[in-house]
Image 1 (cartoon, helix red, strand yellow):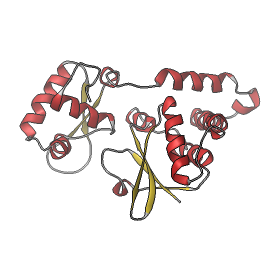
Image 2: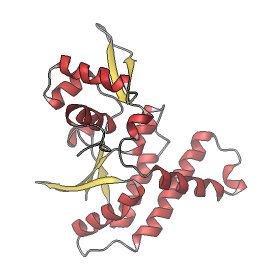
Image 3: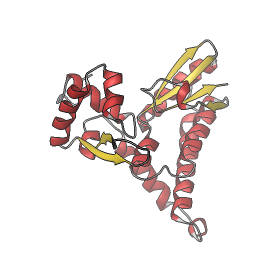
Length: 219
């Protein structure tokens, strides 16, 4: 994959890793890329110089300070995305809120309500379009349909059954900016359950590969 035709090789790989995480250290990047720390630092220096990567100090713990690197908005813009469509959907939900739905609610409560409404609308819109007579077929059909709204999901299987794994989850970006909206991940799960037609069990981070940001067991 070539990012927007601008970057290649190790720097592209670094950006791709940072796209899928809320932040990564030099050691994290070195392990995943199998490159020396000094080499990774040189690439990061160039990416920071060009405005694609930012660095912040991670507080806590003893010993040497730990630094985490993350994408800037300019770095995120190098990747294909569906933010315009997602923003339009969010604005539509905000405009349609009735006065009695907003009265007395805090900002975080309103955000949760808007996400819930958007998830319900997507479930209604795509539910009737999902095709397939088996759970696997319906999951693959749902993944293809939801990709138009920025859901980067992959259907995989192992000895225990089927899984849905997600990359570049928007919730990770919210976390990097100060917190995931209340219930955002639950709304995504409920949306997927509705369109596929089966329960999903969230996976812990230890249960899916590092290149993914979330995952569900298809029950």
